[in-house]
Length: 86
Image (tube, rainbow, N blue to C red):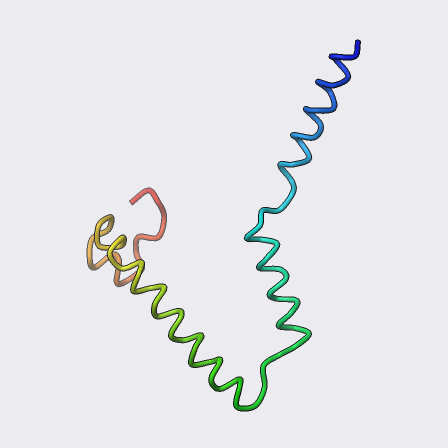
């Protein structure tokens, strides 16, 4: 009887873990809350905007080789092929 109880508990724990958010999701929500409570303003906001633009440009430049390896150039540039079925 004891083994069955442990099996039921472990299957319930496994089922509940499926609904828990991962670390990335938790950090993303914390970032949004922090930005809502302490928004950037003044000169800092200007510099932060530039830093954000540079970070996004870096992100897309790092993704460009993967895009060229998997998609055709016109589909990549027009955004015509977004799904993984291409």
